[in-house]
Length: 72
Image (cartoon, rainbow, N blue to C red):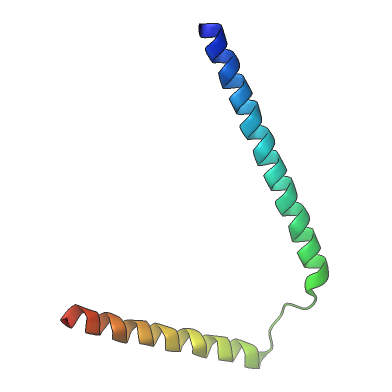
């Protein structure tokens, strides 16, 4: 009875370890592929400014909506 439980525990732990190892390996492989084909990922100042403006606008919109929801 105890022996069967220990065998089941070991089999489960090995299965989880194998799955996690495969997951880490596949993520590392995909990261390498994306890094190779991504090219230049640095944004220009214009792109950075536009992204910052978009984030600020969405945050302001969220604050306006949150304020109107609290008064309802």
